[in-house]
Image (cartoon, rainbow, N blue to C red; front, side):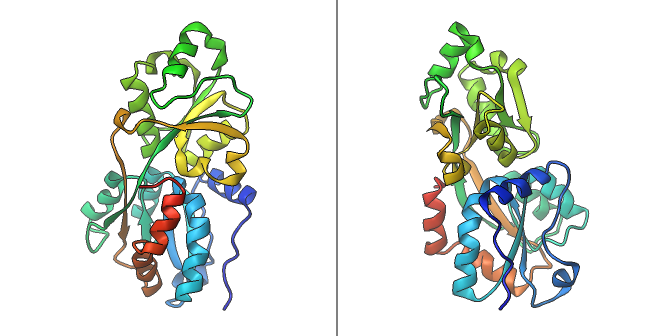
Length: 268
């Protein structure tokens, strides 16, 4: 069986960043039309690291194949509505998945497959004090504002993790001070890259992406207290055109083996 090879971590980051300019589905046209081709999965960018493990696990156990593409939830929904040949959509929240259901593109309203968490993250050399309530960030903005010159979040209009970041910052009355310093990624993978590369002094991103070894070695982080933002309930929906392979992957993502992988990346 010929498998679609997994990209290296660096190339995966590049693939995720490419979605900021436009969607690129990593599968040939012939495979997309073939009933025996891979399951075509459109996934929110926060799922990148988990899918790097989940896909080969599924391919070994089910003898099926998966081709997945990453982007912000909003952009993926728009592309699917415009005809992207996706068969399964893994949203970063419930709202965007249910938009497809409400548009009549899915057989049902799908299921919640994970609950995500956000993390306050800084480059490893940063002196910023980290705590779940963001008190250190708030103090730094008052006493030493130059400590945070640029702060990265995902665009809250496109990415649910960006929306959660704004909620947390607003709840702790930090949002007004940070707005002039904001750098917004079009998806959460791009936001994570800004922080881990040092292009931003810090930021709030998906915990799952921070736990990737390529990122964890370069940053410090703390999980943001869950009471500071609405729960990030991630819902997945099959499209009406879903192939047997896509349906099998949908079932697999609800299995104990898949949930164990998701838990290792901080999902609840």
